[in-house]
Structure formats: structure tokens, C-alpha cells
Image 1 (cartoon, rainbow, N blue to C red):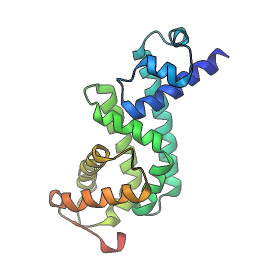
Image 2: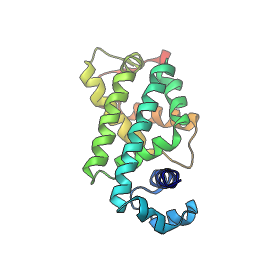
Image 3: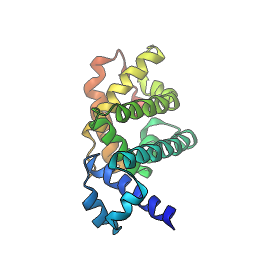
Image 4: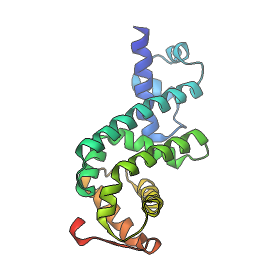
Length: 187
């Protein structure tokens, strides 16, 4: 029973972090989750310990997301954004990691997860752009695109279409940073 309550705290806090970032209120979390606040301190010594558990859960969710990418993404557009849509809460959590880089563990997890995502997506990325650039150039450029995309992502307008439109807008405005162009066959 106590493990179930602990898991409820983690799941509720994960959702809260995805919405508000690490500065969410434990009192508000308790009220929203309808869990007694005292039980939080039975399971976690501090908010920092809870945040550590959230990062572990996020790593598990990243692994599931990467498996989904490997199995389901056949082309960057629209398949990537269909996958993103199915993993909305994890994507929003991931966005908060970027928005709070002052915590090294947040930015480190954000960056390492993106590295793995890019390794999976690299063949699709290369097809999207017409260039002879190196893999490293593609990856560095795609980091720029991903950071801009996460920063500008509107959690209140989270649809496949809006995410594709945002990605296309960012790509079209940042191509000057990269010696290539978007392939007309990939749009």
C-alpha cells in the first residue's frame, strides 16, 4: 500500500513538473493529487529527493520514447511529431529541463536524451536537408533547432499540426546557420 502511495506522489509530481517546472508547490501538489501532505514526507526526505525520483522516472520515459521512435518513425515529418504527441507529458517535462538549465542534472539529462534521439533520427534528418554536411554538423545544427523548438513550444496548443508548423518555421529561419536546404520532397 505504501509503495502505491509513493508511486502516486511521483506520478502527480511528474505531471506538476511538466506543467510548472521544479518550482511547483508541494501544498498545491497535495491538494491536486488528494494525497495527504504528511505522507509525502513519509516517502521522501525532501523535495530534492522527490525531484531525483522524477529524473529517474523521466529517464524511463525517455527510454520508452526512444523505443517508440525506433519502431515508428519512418520519416521525420509527420512521424516524429505523431510520436511526440503520444508522449506529451514527457515532452513537456523535457521542455522544463531545458527551461531550467541552472540545475546541472536537468540540462545534462536534457542534452544526453537529445543526443540519443538525434542518433535515432539522423537518417531522417539527413533526408530532410539537401547537403553534404558531416553527421556532427547535422547533430549540432539539430541541437539548435530542438532547443528553439522546445523553448517556443506552446503547451496549450499541443497538436501534431502545430508542432510541425513550429518546426518548419524554425527550420526555415535557421537555415542560414547550416549549409543546406530543406528537401522539397520531405515537407
